[in-house]
Length: 483
Image (cartoon, rainbow, N blue to C red; front, side, top):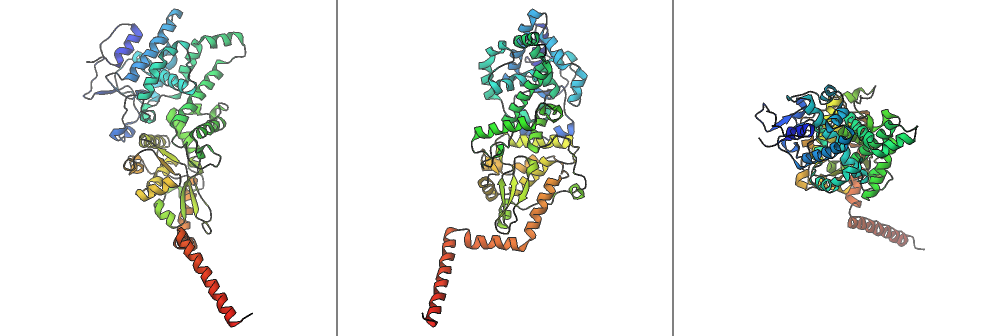
């Protein structure tokens, strides 16, 4: 059998090669820990991991460049620890702590690996995430010894598929990320000097600050709702990508500060949970609103974007988060506006939304779900090419894939996803849409506008006809009643 990950783990621990462990499995994959099977089995085949082997999920027996890079990080760390009479093995144990707690964080174990091997695998994954996002955020590392890996890291960044960051069984528990940062800070000489010189220095505050930076950077890079094109002041409305990024960063710092901790992203379970919290504007589990008995029913389907526009409702990308979705405007004088977040569609977006929906379903036990309501809404709005054109023009979708790739995307994200109980936000929005459609005066206004004023030449003809009618009336009047 080719040299695999376990061999590398054992080389880190003992410095000598070991044979790969025998895997009692007919497949070419193995799993240390896994999420519940009823979630994993829902993944379409193209959502499987493509090389960035995070967490205790499905790992290939052969090594990927990213996996080898993790061991490069660990070897450098080991060489720094050796003079201190420590080792990588001790670092991994300090990071993971109680291995049974770690296994429980991944909802169970399905492979016969020793605790010692699991320690190293978990510590490698936590260390890599911390290493990666620390560099992306500021171009620096926790330890100066890591600087020799800058060139390799840039190569790895070109290989990483963002899809891998969203896989629900690819998540590293937050406490492991925090623990990895804590251990790195204790090793760092600069931090050691600060602790010695400043009696008020608190290591845990530094750890939380560093973790906040890393989480914010992850959200900035992975959030699908960051670059809408209207300019109304929120981070979701900036035409300029950098402006959008800067305002989102300010929003994260203001909305999710380190103190109080209960409000911070640090309180989330993992990176996918952080993304969900920012996108939806609330954490999980999220209960449906008291007194909203109708919210316990499934949302009634709404027409497509083309049909909504025909009755005077424009779908527009104007909402900062899914908690801000609403129908604004009376619809009597001007079209009402269905305000949705602007979503930027890349090749990984389908996997991102699918896994976010599964995370919501798992954490809320299939009940209330703003994200799944959003996916259902988009599936109703985007039926054909004409709908896609309208949504693109109105800033709801910024498509970086082909139209063929977008066709059916929203329906595919809902594969294996249960229908949720809608929150009051979605209930009010859908009620207003259906009330608008039932109001004849609003429909007539829209039809008259489309008939007489939508096209420039039609408008000119109507104005010319009115002028001619007025002149004819004046001519008749003065003919009968000369001055």
